[in-house]
Image 1 (tube, each protein chain N blue to C red):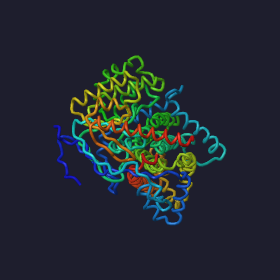
Image 2 (tube, each protein chain N blue to C red):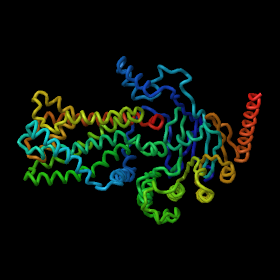
Image 3 (cartoon, chains in turn green, purple):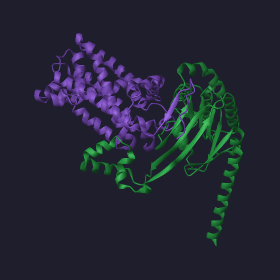
Image 4 (cartoon, one colour):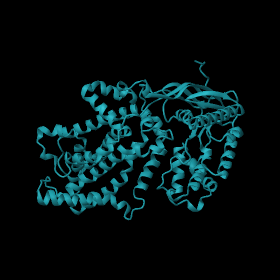
Length: 281
Length: 282
């Protein structure tokens, strides 16, 4: 089992358009184009949105949020991704979760993949807790029968039996997180993608999450997670990635990667302090 | 490039690639997500009348009050001809499908933006969102339809055998709302101008559709052009099947149906082409 591939990523890249023009300008540009060359505009409508404004932009108008990322993850591996804000971690997870498409390269996912990029995905604040269990469960890809079967368990795990028929908008944020986690804990994917889930709850919640993840990884579930908590990565992961400026700069054991990351962070802080001192002088 | 990887059965393979020109409607996948469509429809119905006092009664009040106003303005004051049918039932028979249509159109056009939290956090076939928005209004439609049947009984109108065509017109109205909703929702993702334009669009559309008046007012030679508004065919179809009116001009029906079909196919194509960029520009 250990040698089977779970995620294969090859030369993955994502380019974004810098949105330094106002929406009105873009619309006006498109309207002008419609008048000047209607046919050309119509054909371009069916292409990418960025190609439409290409004529007025320069090379500075685009930036690569993710560039030339390649890696292979095998089944049962638990991979943690670290990096500063804007390093491309979230966009990588979004591409792997099929929320947005890459600009270059490809990724192949082997097996059923579930992702949680946010804790209470699919909750509607006007609906009750019970209604939201079905809503959120279906959105995470569970079948109705399966949710019904697990309903009791979810309610017990969330410790919300008395509040089931209250609209979620009246829940405290702690209650919401508990409910969301109880639903997500029923997922049995081959691959699980998590973005910063561990940073929202209190200590007790994180302990629960970690126990759940441990249970999954014991059953050969592959996990790919982003966390700003280095301790969690050291504790959970068998491998870690360091990302910077949209690139995968390091792929090693968690200890090595975390050390490098912390050292980088430290030197950056010192550099900032130094520049501050010189500017003060 | 690395060697291709041997598949590990029974694990499904998902390949993620840059957008390409291949259009795959993904109807099979849509079918698999049937549970989610159903839940979103139920959500729509439940959320609609949360924290209201009279709840579902709203579904009847809107067309009913419009009918009263229309009757006073167009029947009593302007004395518009209504093809020898009592004006209240004549206009209410049009207002029931029309109210559903405007509601479904507005909901579906703004649906993608309304559900952006879902769109940017989970994968599912994007078509689900406007489809569920269109279907969500059907509950209200059936409530007000019952009211229409009561009104028919009050005026002693018993529909004849042409009523078997009614389901066709109900389907046509759903598809028309979906067709226009697909276009507008996909545009609304990038240009919120759509949301601003919608109330105005609905208002204009009301006047070019035979709601307050009869399409027989339109000269024969213009019927074809008039039919380009798909709602013209739908509304006249409702009157024909429910009010024992003689069959409306065939050219009007045909043109309206074809127009809906064109809008729907074009809308599906357009939506599919744009959906890869929804989360990038929303």
